[in-house]
Image 1 (cartoon, rainbow, N blue to C red):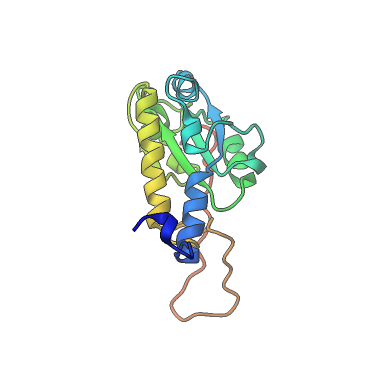
Image 2 (tube, helix red, strand yellow):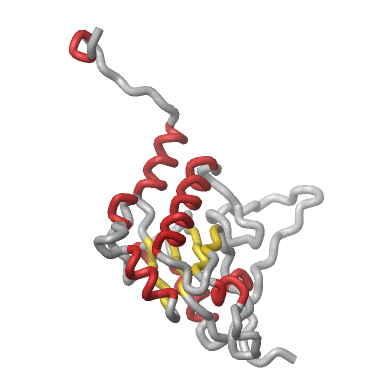
Length: 189
């Protein structure tokens, strides 16, 4: 019996799975290329590696049109507030990929001018290791993020209180309002 013999064709699934599929298939990245990792990120969008097959062919220049931030390269103390502002302007749900060892841990720049890990500024979902990580590593990080989106919940609350806009108005016993993580700017004492 072939498909032509069926009288009624239909597809079943849950609304949650449909929403997860749509989110996974249309992640729009906002670039935050700061150093040599940005060259590798641009190469991942070129014809040889083709991010278009994942629905990500256009890197958005406006954070209001993006839901994925790829932090590629070292983040200086002066750039940290700008990074946080761009992250805050992105639409929910939003994700962050830390690309490269400099963005993830500060790399070889262990000094007062470089943030020792972008996770001090914004919550990071996936880390792409390497110095600089190649386009294949970024694509692997994107596929890891896709799997995280596929298996995660539709609504979620981040541990630092920057979740999907969920507000608890009434008093819940034992619950403490999470404080946003501060952005550390300036020379450490």
